[in-house]
Length: 191
Image (cartoon, rainbow, N blue to C red):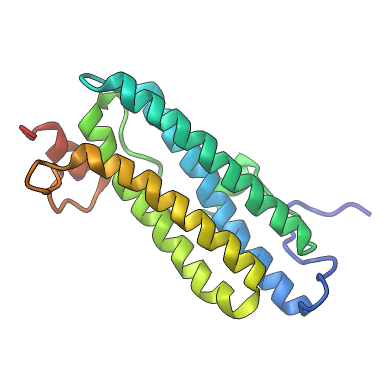
């Protein structure tokens, strides 16, 4: 029997999980998988396109973040399989299912990319928290996985934010809420 990769229905549920809970866990995790895969692509894009003072440190930081996020994506995909569903990491499925836009920054200076990436992390972390809130009611094992990942994502974001703070603790991107706005504000800042 062949199944489509879009089918998120679990084929079995681990002991102690109802079929309905296993299906919901898989659905929530598939969204997290898309988000993490997209984040790895965005980080790699910024890694290739960041320029200017501080280039090497940020270039290497972003590569380290890619490795960490890829490991998170792998853990999420394996958890989807563990609850009996079929993880889908294909690019077409990600684009079809996502509800966010592509990363908006091309070649840009270090502060511009980092300011935009801070907002990307805000979205990923916020959505991870929403999934965790529901997961805490469904499955403690998967909730633990998301909790651990949240800690790592927040640490990665903090490393980015540390590059964007003035000595007074203000963000060089100000209160901008879009990637392009944050990048522009950071690029023109005197820091």
